[in-house]
Image 1: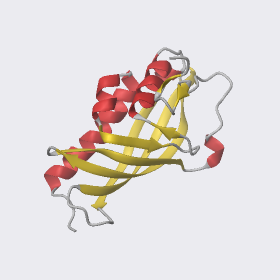
Image 2: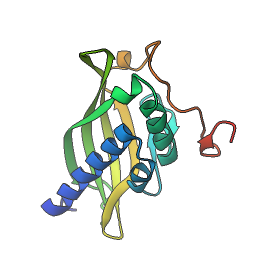
Image 3: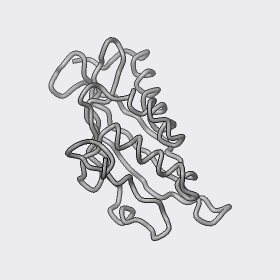
Image 4: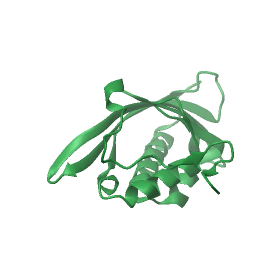
Length: 163
């Protein structure tokens, strides 16, 4: 199976830029629009994630003094053919950094991550089918005492806890 054409690889890069900018800005609709039906993420700590959880976490972080300084920086996106040879799928390896400000004006790299993703073309648009996000080093995983947590989420119901 050949690589998607250059124009589609540009669209794939736009998908990543759209997703991470939406996460930074807590744009729930844009976050959710990046996923194919049934699309999901498996996070660095092994926990499952859904587009709705990502949107809720973006909103939580955006309402916190430290969290609103988080910025996701996409650094490398390598598009490859789908290992299973499916026509409307491709495989992507990518890196991203998350920066934050705890003590202005000092910006730190909070997380350095890699993702191995399967994308699906749905109605001509590339979307996330599955994502596996990992930390480049486990020591960056534990949270600092003063940073915002992820949203408190009921993954069985795919809603915030208590709803």
